[in-house]
Image (tube, rainbow, N blue to C red; front, side, top):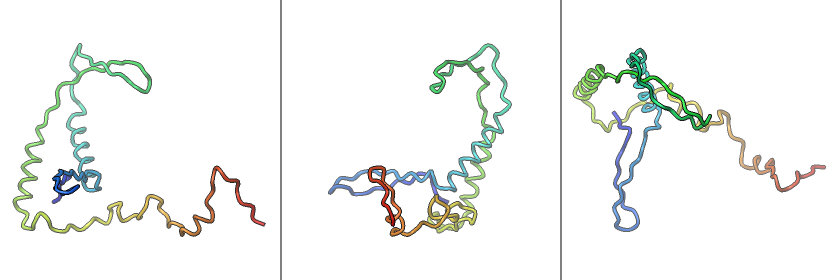
Length: 142
């Protein structure tokens, strides 16, 4: 079990102690967890009733105009106690240490490619030879 926010104390610039927040909320596991929670929230609240005669004003920066939308009834979270109880039960029944190594799923995008290019990078020498500049005319090869 790993947390989305890790707090690390570091000594920086001599003896000053600074608090550094290392945010790991962009890890794949945390991202998919947020997506699942958003889906649960959407499914529980998609059919909320509209309150008659109540509207909210919304300004669109893109179009530069105002519009109104009807106000819906407040969200209810009856599923949260069940989720919390399940999380606490699983943690209590977990015999392994919290700092154990966890095997990364084979479907994790980390395994797809080391870069976003999705193809092997050419060698540095090739890139230097084919480098184009906007400020210099292309070299003529005879």
